[in-house]
Image (cartoon, rainbow, N blue to C red; front, side, top):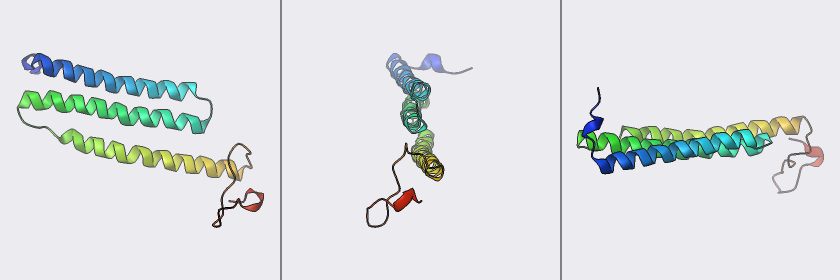
Length: 126
């Protein structure tokens, strides 16, 4: 099936450590999503969990396949770039949409919008 039996012990330990570290970050992010109370608090933990978790798992994958194939395998770098770029952008878009919704509904839980002069707009207008 696979040639994992040919993997040196140091590479197997490093790979398993990196994959477990990445999975641990992802689990912490998922727990943060469940435990935090408001939408704005909940956004942060899964974003960090996804980014750092993906990084750990991809580093483990790079080590595993580079050692087995005796050459650098860098396909995972492209995956890491896409995840690192898209996750924060998605977070910002979700936050702005939620903030706009909350301001439109007149929620007092969010700060009022700021005008071009740095002062809050009258009446909380968007």
